[in-house]
Image (cartoon, rainbow, N blue to C red; front, side, top):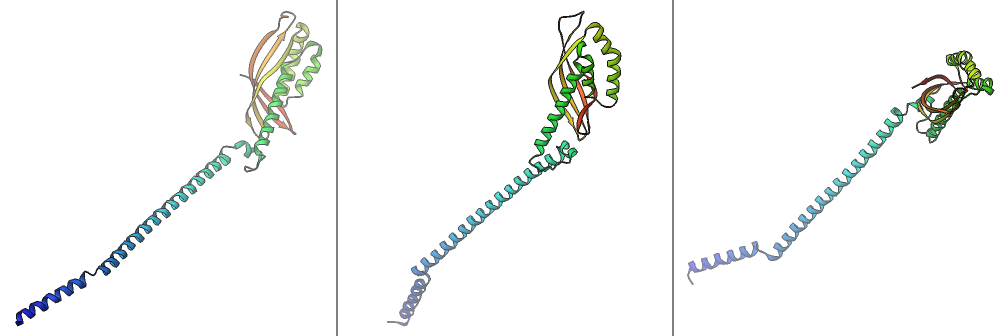
Length: 225
């Protein structure tokens, strides 16, 4: 065999061995598996990051919602309840609303009873009726009512037999403070007299202002509207 043929055969052997070395099936499989594992790990990492991101977003949203609710509650308790501030009550006490309702009921009852006493009298019980009415009044209005009944109501009731009977259809508290209150009262009043024996019904509304005097709610103003 010639030297050229030997050199060609040697070159072919080297190329074949080099190709075999470069394309080793076992190494190729291992490389692919490693690549696949790396890709899987990457996908898992991405999914984990996304899950964590969603969780963080959910927590932040929950915190914001709780914060907004707390803010709304603060606005309500600290700004929208001036009546509670007036009485010095604790905003977070469970009994606050109950105490306010009790005060409103007490004030409305005082306005109701006082209005009925003011507008109800009969000739045969006039002195007693007027004294009862005055017991529900205070201040300048008490002075005015005393003068008005002495000069106008008493003579008319005795001479003409005027009799009135009032009932309160409804009483609604519009303002409530520590020592004063305003109540809107809706009144039905039936009147009879010697000249008009048939009952005459009149309906009206009155703004009643009350003042707290030594724990008693007394009428200090009485204004028909």
